Image (spheres, rainbow, N blue to C red):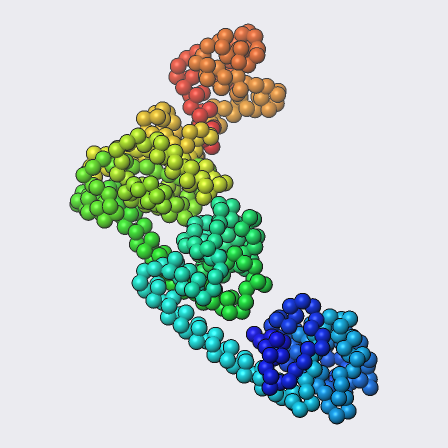
Length: 515
């Protein structure tokens, strides 16, 4: 964009500054020029246009009113053309511009307004040509960077050759895919990820300590998958900078689409591996080769883990990617397969499993702060031929942990009681029938009488049937405890002193906790 100073510094235009306006006004961009003699041109003058006038409106309005009208249109300034009738710019006009802080230039009577128009047109043509040439060159550089495998980092390097801007590429999971000159903490990354979930996503965000940032959306197949983040608000970016960022975002969309295609192929291969393990037979012979393709030694010790979220939604988009990133960062060869109910990992591992699994839970929780991840450890297989049993066990443990009240997030098959595994394998309908059949009479009694029979039963079983310890925990007399347990027997037909009846009551309470 040209400025008033650009015109003033051209000697052929013979312009003289009478009123410079506010600080920096001469260096503000000018949209175009507008020749007018209307007393009130505000309806026709566009934002940041330069008004050219000979003052023929002077017999209809005072200079102060004309200047006020020009200012209301938010014009870039006024150029007063001298002529034989007005060889000097009227002092009233100069004073009015000074009071209104509107830049005022004076043009020699020997230079017509068309000279300014021609100069502006030439400047626009040159600027546009330069911008188009720059866009073509930048496009070639971006295409070269992507074709050579430079990825998102290569795109940012191309941008930074022209514009020293703080940049980052962040995907919708809050992962930084590339960074150049920007410093984004965990909070800023989460803010970008949250913004990308909105429809439509914002084009500007407050990133806390990083300040306000502009977002240029990156998408593959119509979706918004990431953002090119510039740590500058939009109003601080020039038109050339915005054009460059928008162009780079389009090229990043190609890179994201390529990465998604590769990830989809890897996920499909990983899922097929699980099917091979579970099906056995002829397909089991393909397992070692598939493991080697992922860098996992099929002849060494192999651990199998299943991860999911406790609660209604077992998995979410991006969970498998987070798990894969964790093992890559840990330097652990692993195959990560995403499913609808869990994410299964087969990994080469010789040491204790719990510490690494706890770190995995923490990493997943960092990305999904409102979820509770759980990991079922299925044990270690000595080679790929023995993977089926650890795979089945890991999923059983994970399914049980998902339906268990908050507790340890990582458990091995051996850590869980048999009753928990049995209950965890049942569907919700079966558990509900067990709970209602046994506990409904107790709960109805408690609701009607304000009693504590269910609480008493839980305490009695938690204390392994010890009367004194249970009474002390409930802060009641032993006789009160005996009366309550007798009432439970009357209501349910199950005597806590008989082992089969006590098992029924215990399983009903455990099933209730899983619902």
